[in-house]
Length: 110
Image (cartoon, rainbow, N blue to C red; front, top):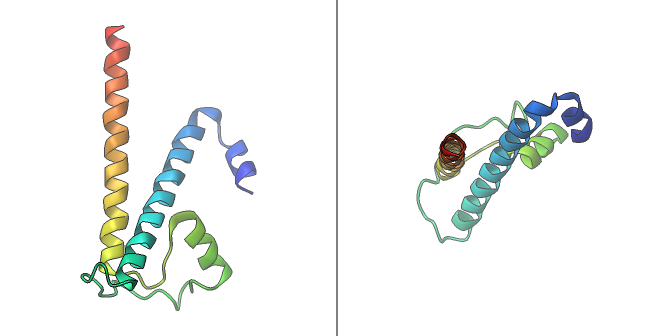
């Protein structure tokens, strides 16, 4: 399914799309790891629920499972998960910008 979606995208946009998918996948994994640490009692703060979207898209239904696999969807995320999710996205986008600008500088000097 994702192959046909990626094949339909012009080749100049494929890397941008796959980079975005990888960023969201990594953010979801980091948020899930934060929840595991919280469940184990290692991290004991920010455990309040941000929202409850289980009535709209339950996590155990097929749309919730697909979203969980692709972007780390949780129907009742905690504040810790939200902070880790957004923080991971910001760090990864920032690092991508830094490396892109250094590559542009290297191309200009070459």
